[in-house]
Length: 379
Image (cartoon, rainbow, N blue to C red; front, side, top):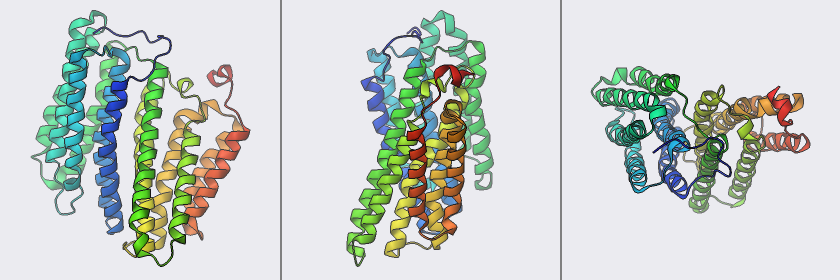
C-alpha cells in the first residue's frame, strides 16, 4: 500500500467505491425518514438536532474513506475486506438511528458502536499505509493515533448524563474534524482532485435520488387519503423540478477547479451541509404531503420552511465551495439572492411552488452564463 500518483490520468471511482456509496443510501434514507416523522409530529427542534448529529456520523465515515481511497486505494483482498467491514458498520448504524430521535432519551448506543466499528477499520487501513509507505509514515500514524483516541472518547460518550449529550457531542465532533488538520501537517496525502470531486458528485446524486424515491413513495402512499389526485400530481411535479434544478446547479461549476491544497478542507467539510440539506429536502416534501392528508401538527408556514430551508442551505453551500470562484458577477449575485428568496418565500402564497420557480430562474441564468475560463477563476 503506497500512495497513488495525484496526477494519474483517467482516474475514476472504482466499483468498490460505488458499492460502498450504495450502502450509505440506507442510512441517509433512514435519517431523512426519522426527520420527516419528527417534523410532522411537531418536534422540529429536537428532530433537526438529532438529524444533524446522526448525519455527521454518516458523512464523516463516508468522507474519511473517500479521501483515504483517493490516496491509497490498492484494491487487493485485504483492502476490500476492511472496506466491507466499514459497510457493515453503516448498515448497523442505520438500525440505530431511530432511537436517537426519541424525545425522552436519545439512545446513541447502536449508532456509536457501529460508528466505532467503521473507524476501527479505518485505523487498520492507516496502520497498513504507515507500515508500507515510508514517505507518509508520520502522516498515516498521526491519523491512526488521532482516530483511535477519539473512538475511546466516543465509547465514553455513551455513559454521560443526558443533559450533557449535545455539548459533549459537539466537542467530539470538533475532535474528529481536527484529526485530518493535525495529521496533514506531518505530510500532505496526495489526493486526486478529479477523483475526489467525482466521488462527491456521485454522493450528491445518490442523496438527491434518495429524495426523489422517498417523495415518490410518500406520494403513492397518500393516494387513498386525498379526494383528488391533482394536488399529489402537483407535488410530484414540483419535487422533480426542484431536484432537477438542484442537480443542475450543483454540476454547473467545474468542481476540480474549485478544490486545491488551500481549499481542500473547506470543500470537504462544507459538503456536510450540502449533503445534509439534500437529504432533508425529501423530509420537507413528505411533510408537505402530510399537510395535504392532515397528518401533521405543523402550521402551514412551518410546512413551507421544512422545504425551503434545506434548499436554501444547499444553494448557499454549493455557491460558497464551487460556484463563487468560477462565476462572474451576475451569477455570484443571482445564486445567493435566490437562496435568500427561497428562505423567505414561505411567508408568501404558494411558497413551495414559488421555490421551484426561483430555482428555474437560477438555472436559466446559469445556462446563459458560462463558468469562467480556468485562468480567470484562478485569478
